[in-house]
Length: 393
Image 1 (spheres, rainbow, N blue to C red):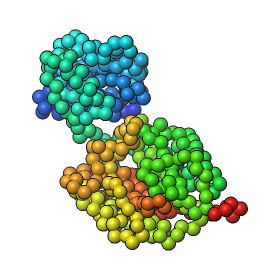
Image 2 (cartoon, rainbow, N blue to C red):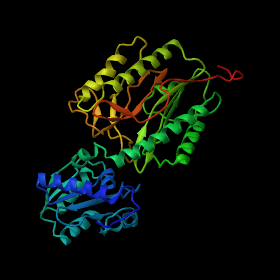
Image 3 (cartoon, helix red, strand yellow):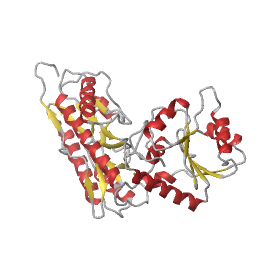
Image 4 (cartoon, rainbow, N blue to C red):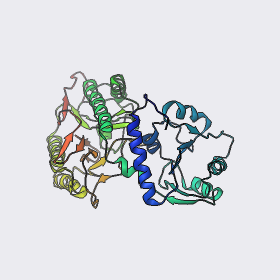
């Protein structure tokens, strides 16, 4: 392991992670682990790139130094951004699977038990078939979730990154609120939020902020579209700040002009749901029960407010196409796993009235032994911007 003092984490943290992975490898009887998920590669080495749409893999032998196979272009990043010393890059005109076979033979791993990530988005079924056919002397064992199971509980250095990311998300929301007024486009809100968040220190988040106005606010995952804001519009803001690929997110909702009685009722309901989750969460709580607390509150409303998603998801280390770790752990009906200390979740018991408006007042939290620590720090309430009277309703 090449010693570095300029990586996102101290070398002791990377050594701890590698030791835990090798411990799991021993339990599964593996000789080598093939890691293809960009989050998992970053978690173990510090290497990051936007080029993970092309094949890349970190190989971790049980009793030898790890090495990486990437495009030759990406080798520069491995050398500059990680502690990995051994690389075997392939050219764009080479077959990456023939290259992988040759590298495994070079390191005498071609007949070994190799763990791989079947569920990796960036090691497709077609790629797996090509790789396995060419490396037919090896035994490939699915180890999806091995590293994710280690990632779901955050270390103190990881929590420091998430706390910093939360400050950037807060900055984006505050500036988005300040920018909001009738007559501007939602592009202007987006520009101000991006500028403020990045100027404050945020790295590029895995997903741009969700900024949806008027009836578009009631569309799941909608974002800015050049729409001009009008009096009476709902304004839905949901950014995630990012520090060294670790994220924290929050939702806030506002209106241009006074909210209607139904909108105020939606605010009350969603705020109550968030606060009920905050009160219920603690180490040992069952995920489905945490979800049910919010779902009961939102489900009993009389204004047509609908909850169409899980109530919370794990958040932390992420690359596009998502800032969440929901595939690792989410709070939804039927999830029987329990919450553990230092898990981090984005609480999202938000609702929408189809075709009209949305209501979100979400928080990023850390699970503690006796409750939870709310990491985002903004007023948990609707914001109201005075209408510009010269503009028509």
